[in-house]
Picture (cartoon, rainbow, N blue to C red):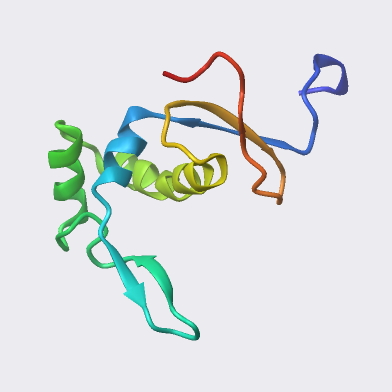
Length: 111
């Protein structure tokens, strides 16, 4: 993307999908006592059981290839960060300045 197309070079874009939201709604949140303590997603059982990909297939209602499941699972980090920053869980296109986490919804994209 060049300088003349209206896209800033330091802009990061991400599309939150219904798959991301379905997975986030099922995440198993616990309390981590390290340091001062904080809420944390259970890394061994993020969706309740230790068979992560089987859990994902049940939640999403379809079979997933390993690479697709891994990608969607890893993308939930960004989708959760967006939801926490903007204050709602909604599909759509979002953007932020690189390295800033100042996510905002791009107009006219969500449901």
